[in-house]
Image (cartoon, rainbow over all chains, first blue to last red; front, side, top):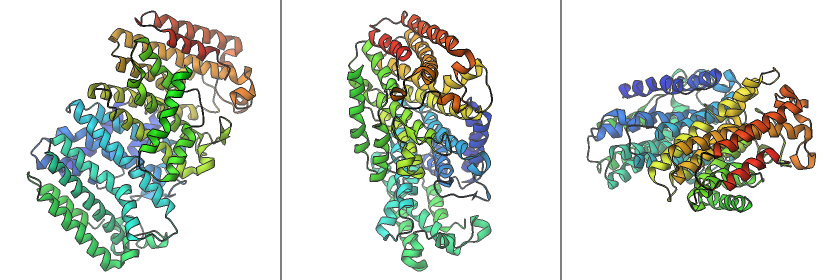
Length: 286
Length: 286
């Protein structure tokens, strides 16, 4: 996993550096790209290629594109007009360093460049590129991540039920995690049935990811998770722990992790790295 | 021209309505899409198809996508963190109606959906879709529109020379106008040399467009241009009129309009609509 993490991180300066743009914009984009993070989405793309024994080169630009989209969403979500966060991963948020205007534009630029990365990928056929762009725009746009973020903000201060919470998170975080697997499956040329199984795997680990986040907020170590323990409760956030209790949330996490593993039974290749990732998502300490 | 304007405007509710998303997001997107406007960019795409005698259907989704990108850029530019505008085209700006958070997300959603529109176009080959997406991301991202917007904001309050002003506007407004022609040329399958001529035509009408905007700010009719005459000077903006005077700006406008017409000499089809558009851009009263 750490090989793939290094791999995608090494692409950022080259990709951003290759485009002509104002120096401040470049710095602002790289500041957030290089702020660290688990790189779960790129890892998922690479893990699918690994499953089918395909060289990782073919996934480089797509993996990078999906991390660009994740990073742009964090920059915009942190803005004063949105979640108004000053600190992320132990560093000042983008707009605290570069100003709100530059942060908005850096996000816009990264979102735009992500589709360019896929469109200009020289290792993929035009057909595959179009399929990936169609899937990624669906997952990251209004029907997916953007819509989920708006619903999440609108739900603040009012109690939601588990079904609504799941609907919000399936779009806000699940869709992009799931499309990372779908994109990997397209690149690898996985059979249709296996593509569906990988997408279903993605949906379950997406939910696991969120439940684990909620659990870490009450059980985690502040120095590891990079924010005060209990901040969700302080901020009156709708979480699985709040709705189901710690035990209920743990049980739901086990359920989705098991369902994720079950989906992998239908995948023909060597799913070792995918399994490692699924286990990491439910057992991580940060 | 008005036929094509109606044509693209009729697509907006269908396109936005076809995606599942929060109702507020949908309303916010349509509010800005339906706020009026000259629709110059879609008209340029259609005009190129008209030149080569190709049915407009083939340009529908690309024309719509480029207008989505233009509209998203207006929503983000109007935000308090950017130009802080309360009124556009005689109506309250998006964030004044739906709030800053929803306006940011509506812009993000429209930018994302624009690439989906192209990727899912059933009338174009995968090769053409990829070519168009590559060109549009270049024109609208960090090397183009987004970078130009940042440089424009950073240049506020300091005097720039004509060369710098041109470099800013070539990216901020010119790149997207020019890529509308380029996309039309790709759809139409125009010969390489004619694609280059159409792009060059686009660069000249892009500059004409901006010079005319600056002239209208001092010579226009308030009720037509939708903002107070002289507002550029009040806001200490860098304009062609400020740098060259009214006569100098008029001369520069004539120069670029003539150069635009000259480029069309190299285009084989019936360029009547393109000529009409070029004339409109330099003679318009709003």
